[in-house]
Length: 275
Image (cartoon, rainbow, N blue to C red; front, side, top):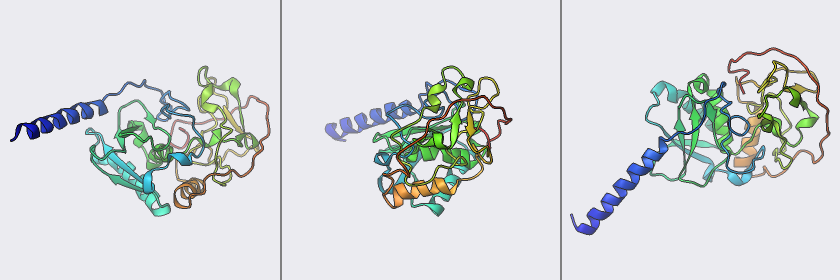
């Protein structure tokens, strides 16, 4: 082999070895619930100011490329593939498994430290979605993180959330208040607020005393924080952003201010209420 070619091949080999090792590095702290990995809003890795819908962070051609870490079993891969199938059936978004040389992909990890993602396409070599064992109980938990990666924040942080829910900050664990901050620059893609969205917290999320952190103003708790299905509102937002390119508006431009009160309810740590 000519010296120049040998040197080039050696350099590429060393680069790939170092880069692949970097993919296995994990520095995040554990947290109690799957979607509460102690990041921004529990499961969002910090990178930039987020919105409910972030059209400037779309994936090219509506395609998410992804790679599994080596410790995924075939059974653990299935919830991810199931979410991808549903997105393909109901939206124009497509998922495609690839290799680490294909720059710009999601690297799925399954470290036992909860579920977390970044918001939208990061314009980097790769970005991480971690899905610990508790995150693989059903594919909707997986979809929650993938929808973050598609460019969507949590629904209860929308600019108009005060018209529909009350945030009881006095019941929120100290240091977790930032998880409930309203994003006044939100784009809702002209899709009405939906407390049953896959991207909405449940009533006891981050509660320090067993009392509600989120209270629906109309008293209807049905489905709030559910992780049983992708709601049509979730699908509509994805389609408006990716298929119709019109997720640049809001349903209204004014919100109301509400006061905080204390209320009680019950819940469990099943996928339907972990948010």
